[in-house]
Length: 527
Image (cartoon, rainbow, N blue to C red; front, side):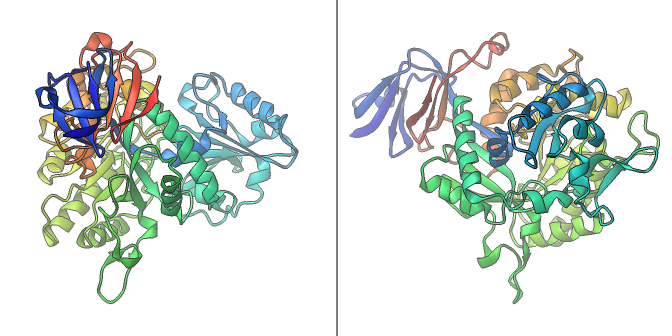
């Protein structure tokens, strides 16, 4: 038998050192390769090989498009004046009247707190300025932009923050950001395709071979109502470098008429597509952000006695949408961060499953950030998947600790408890909210250290092996893809990352690097 390629001289946790590929799938391992001929052979030089990393919750198009925006993360901005300086530098490069868009600031890490419209006015007079919070749940605009917004008609589930004198600070939170939609939506399809191409190159360099896009089409995260077409075009041009499962924004679903259900036109729902591109869950927003202190909580945020956050989608609408989507056969992925939001979402899932029982639904709670013990028991009992982000502990952990206070820290972005409850745990980043390299995420799942060095939830630490499994098998399971990807087994797709060291050894986590990435049996990236 002749195969396409044989990879040899590798180290794999399962013990084999060779792997044969035919038509993009693994057809032989270890001793089973003996006697096979191949069109090509690749010597991996004794490197360590793992299944391709799979990010179960990211915003790929948004990340790629945003690479050209002004970068305002904590690595470059320590003081709010640094934000203004970065905006001013971009203004010097553009003609007056242009848009200047920045991304990634975190008021918890900025001396001076949130930027303001007045500061942005001084930095870039004569320009239209928007700077986005790292969580993407809020944004600050200058006066020139505010003057063009209908502030009297803020969408429910959002607010415009006011100064002591009652005037807007420029900060728009949650659904209030939809006021900016006329300026930014829809994004041109060619721009989305270009963003996907740029993101793919970055992802492959990090060992990522599969992703789940956490919301396309509409809502706060969608780029264009024909976003699936952009992905199709990217694939046709062979610039979509990673396998993509697309969660569809709940705003894109509707009653189909004739008693045929609730969903996309032609009755498309979760699972439609192929090995490269398919429709995944319906994405629904319940509440907001923990570091932004807008998520729906049972008790007030630390130091803010009157602030318990709020829902982005009214509770009764959440329940109706979940019921309709569940009945129509969709997998559902609901963004819920605060403990009150999680309670309400659990109620809605429980009611839907009681009315229309369905085996192996794999409904999800995205982020699932403040998870009380009793609610963890309910989550596991309902067969739900929690999708927390381990990387958040490092990049956002200090802000989360400050928002919760010490009495609630133990409930924050739980990992080990989810596994111990019998749930399958996926690995994800929510990129561009934080850096999305899986090796960074794995290290943080193991160490649980904030950027200031504080230990957040020591009981929630994973072993390196558990963290690696989350970023491979766990994520594949969360997308109904475990039969094709997530492990290196016979018959599965030949997607893998070649690493400089064994990532299941804690001592290696700071130094391990991606040497190469294979997708469909072909090396798509080499360092």
